[in-house]
Length: 484
Image (cartoon, rainbow, N blue to C red):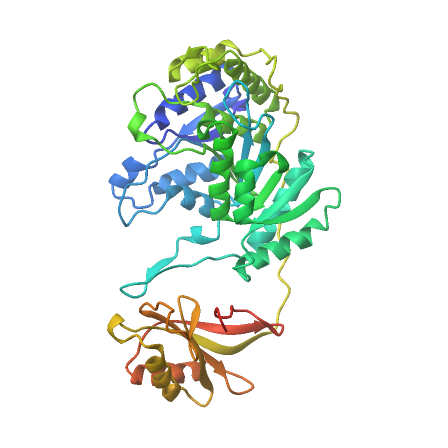
């Protein structure tokens, strides 16, 4: 019998993780889910053993063999030197799509929006979550926001394929491309291009700030939202809380070859061992997992039992409300209540019915990037100029003298605002200066940039970074300074 079971990898995690994982596995076993488990140790205990990644090398072999991972929340130790294991797993295994279903279970779980049924599909590997940060001066810190065309195309196409597979009516893209015209602008343009391939699905775009407000205040106007990594992380927690509780929501992390399923909440060490943790988030993630591995009937049975438990007012403390809840339940008693209701259907909440896999059949292969004519037209040189000597006119005059025949100073910005030439005295300046040099001839070479940097160094400036300025097919591939 064991030979017919699907092997998955399980991690019990930290904090409340072991409690809610055991509850989830008990429900899966009671529902006769045809699964077998390989348990790996990750998280805080592994960090403390000296593995700064939070995972042992042998565990990667288990993950690669099974390809499906059910993970409880983990704790990342405070302080430097520790990378987020969640981000590491997502990026290492190519889990480019994060799928969060945010539903209202009103009136049994308090929510201002009965009938809310929103799916947020978040890019999972790029953006600021690349985790590339530097301190460049005593005052200035930098984080790189990295987006790729293939990564953007993959998540946008996945969102439309998901909407098509689930008979969703609309996909909304959310970006901040009115400010970040190259990164977010590329995401928006890719969305518009791919949307034309799905004429049966309505497509629209919203700026992320008003979009987040609408998730909080008008979620019923949205259906499927696709967005960048950081925005999606924030939006999905807003949506889950508006729907009723962050503690109810599960999350699927999907790639073409691997998948990871988890609750969206953290490890909550403050309530660990108190028998009050709600296992619903991880259970709903496990339900997504069952559908993914081709067990929709088992997923349906468990989901309906869980809905019946909510209808009967058996609620853990995080969702217990006077007048809505009849019984205050701990982790164990809530788990037993779900098991007792296996085989029952809800009477008021919409009955679950999973017929086909939600994600297994969606495979996204980005198209190859068309070749482009790339031309070097200048360089931004970033310098550290101390607080005591930060007059932009002084810097500008000295850098004009340090310019070469090939590359001349065009402007200086501070925190993105032009301060030379013709800056305003009211503009606050820190010790971090972007000095833009543009080409004075038909072709600029790397040797020209090296010669310029030598001249700047000889003028006793502290160069902390350079960024080459390119055009692609004649279009500017860099941002203008504010006021330029």
